[in-house]
Amino acid sequence: MKRNVSVVLVVLLVALLSLPVLGFELPEGFVYVTDVIPTVQLEIRYFTDYNFVGTRISGYNAPTAILTKEAAEALKKAAEILDEQGYYIKIYDAYRPLRAVEHFVFWGADLADQKMKEDFYPNVDKSLLFEQRYIALRSGHSRGSTVDLTIVYKDTLEEVDMGSPFDFLDESSHHGTDQITPEQAANRAILRDAMVAAGFEPYPEEWWHYKLENEPYTDKYFDFPVDLSEDRRWQSFLDEALKKSVARARQTMNENIGGPFGAAIFDSEGNIIVVASNSVLRDHDPTAHAEVNAIREAGRVLGTHDLSGYTLYATGYPCPMCLGAIIWSNITHVIYGARPEDAEAIGFRDDFIYRFIEGGRADSSVLLIEEYGRDECVKLFEEYAENQKQLY
Image (cartoon, rainbow, N blue to C red):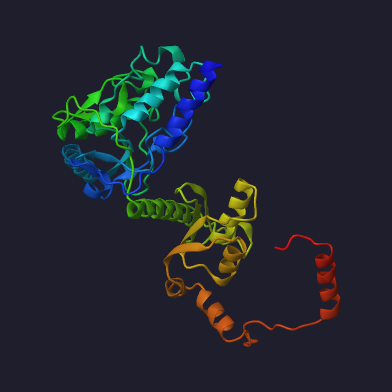
């Protein structure tokens, strides 16, 4: 019984330490990597539940990357080298608070929790993760000058094939392993050479892990959270929604599935629930706009028709049909990229529908609207009301 109580307390502590810090400011000597390297791509895995633990890690309150100024400037040099070769860098993790390391240690000691084994350590017994140096009681990440990263192609943003994924705890992730192809080894060398040239040291067991040689804090470990100010937090939400919406729209556009429209729905913490795009051409469905598809999918994912509290991002200003669907779904905040006139400039007809509505729907050349059978239909409505059916 005592053990169960202690586990509950640890879980509650992890949850409390993961709450956003009001008025958060970075400590002196640290910077956001996105401020130094505008082209950097972020996929902060420990902010999500897709990592070897299987839950968001304590201290990761925002999907951002923080480093010491010295490490960020050195990383910028590596990014410039890679940019000339056709790559951007993509960061999985940078500064890591002590509380996150403690979360890993607590998880590592619980041998019964192996829900992510198949994805991240299929060939290693969990009891050996400490012995084989995949988990440590202290991490260089907490000193602020260590980064986990890969490279992506500039034109597609697809990850370069490194032979094993990030955080794959296996011999195949080691530098010099014979378990990958020559091409994959060459890809790792592209990253390694740029990082070494910029002043970083590789970690033998993990191809993605690099530490600044001349790190400013050699024996100081930090525990401030990975967090953002409220303004930066909102900006990060929008940047992620924009990136995913544009990528999805570009993909389906190029596959002739639909027009250049994408949409994402996210919650108050920035978690993206769904990403969708226009699929009119594929589905032969004139209502299959990105926003409508996103609302339909979100309803299925969340198991509700009421999307109160969620925000929708769209690559273009929603058409009247989509605005109606958004309002009916109880979404009350929409952010858009291109304006209606931008869509009309390439041939889409949104503006003429707005003009039809603003003109009192009187232009019969656009749509002829007539009334017929009102008495029977009103009777149907009254039956519905008498039965006290749900209004929606």
